[in-house]
Length: 65
Image (cartoon, rainbow, N blue to C red; front, side, top):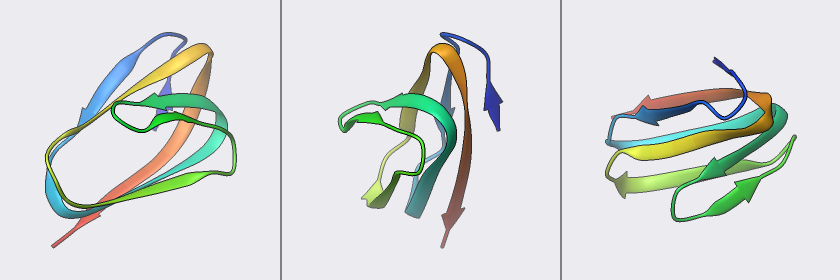
């Protein structure tokens, strides 16, 4: 997904979630900033809130059962 500068979104809670930053920087609530090429995994987490930095960002995010 492409986030406009300073936009935010929430990924629904799931047993497993993975977020990969393809471009830009994203602020992942509770985990700090993820830079391009970095990823985060969550297990049994609630909704994941993320916000794009001023230059915008592109992230790949998926959830599994």
